[in-house]
Image 1 (cartoon, rainbow over the protein chains, first blue to last red):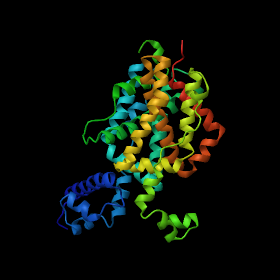
Image 2 (image 1 turned 60 degrees about the vertical axis):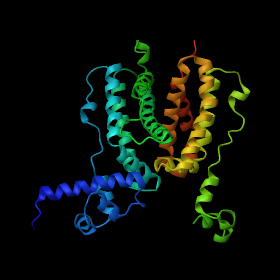
Image 3 (image 1 turned 135 degrees about the vertical axis):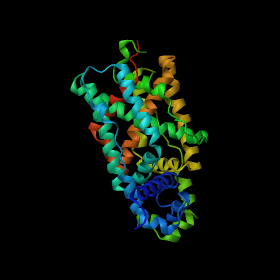
Image 4 (image 1 turned 45 degrees about the horizontal axis):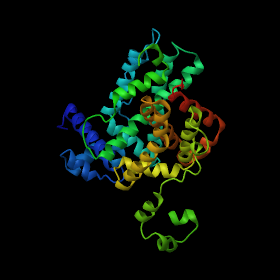
Length: 199
Length: 158
């Protein structure tokens, strides 16, 4: 074996990244192993050295870390509007950076992939829990329940709708299509923090 | 497969729709929302909420169409994108305009927020339940929650 481990890991992650972009753009079924190999500048044979099949690459993608930074779960004081904005902003940034991954999860979800469904469910529950724990510092459990539902729905719906509008406008850009200022104001409103003079 | 699920023969389906693409385009007809709450009631906070719920419930009752257009959107497919553009214009007329009339300057931002929220509810339902979203949305628990969520988006009218 002449290939040293670090080099092999690097090629492996290049394949995963290239496949992720193609799967998100064209869908898993419409992507070929040859297309992935070309994109990352490998021969088919070289790619098969790392992965036995297209399915195995998808499974490696599903294992990519998909959480948000755990520091956000730390709750020590009553939630304020600036704090909520910081949380929402980091979630939007996370969604923007990982947009290929999220598009792929959504696509495969609709195609009936159970892993994709479980990943979406897990991420939604995780984000909801962050909001819920923070909201418990300022309101009743019942109200925190409703408002955390509203906040997670806002983030999911807002990012999906923004990507639709970006598609409609026909722009292919790396800019985040989400109007962050507007979403932040909406989040503050939904959390019931707007009355405190933030608007 | 389409033919089988309808109990028809392949040629019978092909007689009406020469290709899968033709069938797909035929499915993309705009919703008939029927008689709307704002056609029958004066403009109040409650009647706008009813109007939004009416539109949301139409879509929840048609999870198959939602899956088709969302899938089309995710692959930047032109007919689905055009379809969504028209849907968006109808939202402008049926929800955004009344909200501006009701709330003034805050109306547009409120309509945007409600649109984000309802897209979130709808995508959650079709991603989590697929075709079963229809039955889930009919449950009283779901309907109560939906009304609470939509109500949260619209400020109290002074």
